[in-house]
Image 1 (cartoon, rainbow, N blue to C red):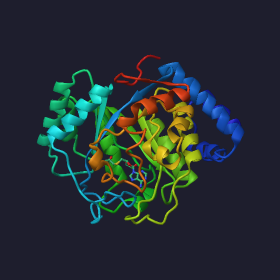
Image 2: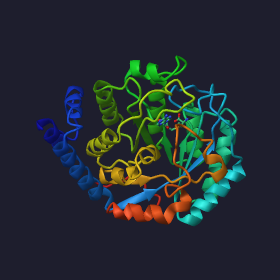
Image 3: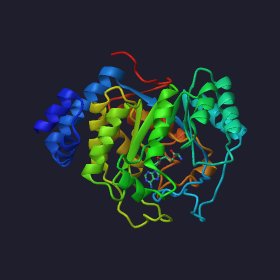
Length: 347
Ligand code: SAH
């Protein structure tokens, strides 16, 4: 247990020590200790507040072919859709009415949304809702594109690094994609003053204690404002259709570890976690998470944004079930707040 005390004391470990730490993922005493420290830190910086983000999945067209993802370009069975600017603005209007003060525009890498079109959408949202934060999650772009969106008013950007190990990255992606480019994007986004989110799936094919240790080393080095961690869940029309899903318990363990590594991080209890476990999101909050991202996409389109099988999207995790979601957040000892929920700057 020495390594756990060292993590709590120093807030970081070496790669070898993370590997050792991961050996405690099934140890009840260790899990409890890490959870308690994670919750202590979350409360220190954010009190009991849990921030809500309205997730708008605005396109499922994608030029990439990530092997794990249900909306990868080569999946001919995916029913494609994209939302027009006005439809996106309607989602924001509904979200604003419900109390959301952050909108997250997420999509596949869809060439239809050129820099000009994206800039127009960002500008329209920020003009209509100047007191709201806008997060983009639309994959890899050039420095110049990211700069244009930032100048148009985008505040945050989510781009999971997926894995910090080269070989593992190649196992998950075709050769047209590279970890070097992914990392460059993250550093570009940081340099442009975005609040940046990295992250990875837990239990993706080929993941080991060593690759996870490298993820933790990378996260500490990048020092992102947000980290998205959720279990891998197979999708029936992908290369990984027959691979097992990731572990909920290991995901919770890693949420606690990330909270300790990056105490002020904005850490979502993800939809994937809620998909694998009915109480996954509450468990995530109790492990140190402080963000939930209910679905604000048009109800008729939600099933089509199918990253993995059985994705929850119409129950209490979605915007319509907000009252029930708030009740669940309270049951986890927290409080859903209507605020932008920016990264905490105080020490
Ligand atoms: N195109 C954007 C958004 C990707 S979807 C981008 O490149 O960032 C958001 C995240 O969903 C991905 O980063 C990935 O980590 C996760 N995801 C994709 N397929 C998944 C699966 N089968 N199981 C769990 N998470 C998945």
